[in-house]
Image (cartoon, rainbow, N blue to C red; front, side):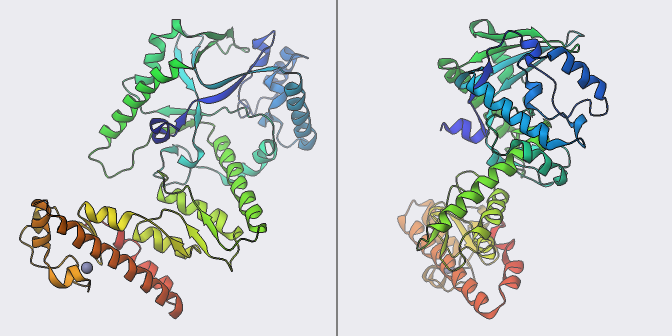
Length: 427
Ligand SMILES: [Zn+2]
């Protein structure tokens, strides 16, 4: 998948649109609106009548508390019927550019696409690319899961805000909208205003990619001098739906973990968590899946990670790791030490007579000073990289030894608490 889509956690999607006589009757408001006004929903029912409609595919929350199992099973049956009757037309690998005109003339612009659920984390101090803007009430997830689980269709009513003050993305699509095929244009029921959608597919996606890249650059520039992780999107509406989607997504991981467990293999690997995912996300997935992996078989976390990642992985039951980090970082003068991470190229080490890590007994630390190795880097002397690689690998080996010893002695928890933050701190 394209790197820009991956970094933004935003992708083109396979979008189903209905081929129906009346789009007015097809489109209804989101299930969590007008919850205290059952009469609103009665009017909607009257308007829709027997026509195909999303009303028959959603569970209006105004009806929560009523007998739900019948409603859920009706939703399932209707989904199946609509699929069999080929009510939908699929637009693969596409975005839709949407303009909604409100009654007062205000135009709201948006883009329909897919997001990467791995990059959404609703926990309060999340540093993920996509974050919630309201507190997520975990109790609200299970009733929503009942409807979504094993459902053939997905009707998201999730709105994300982009931090796009220059209107790079929607502004561009607006400027070329006459070239985009019109998919629908109609008045929404209950005075919801007017809506139209235009297809962005094929070559248009490629051109639009340039604008997504510009947005990505803008965000990266904005956060360049900040210690905060860039936020690409904030959830404006439908946070609980997104949290539900995430929960279902995690269930799939658990199911897979259980299927793989039954294969009774010599060992079990967990991968795909070190290619842009946040640390929080990685820990979360380990928390969710590891209880379902056999305890008596080696468990391997692929491509991870920093010393703290390793400590946190072990705490969750991981037995082994692999990573380029000790050697690659060493070649870029980033060194792991007992006090945190140092960058030997910093000016302050220019005349520093201490070894890389005074507590380390590796070949490099026993024989050379920070100032000397820094000088070697400056002189583009290969020996600099070699010495640093020796040190970092020694550091990792010693770390693993200390973890094993602390597990043997029953002191791992103290070890974790003492070092987990120090080792990943830049000093
Ligand atoms: Zn050393």
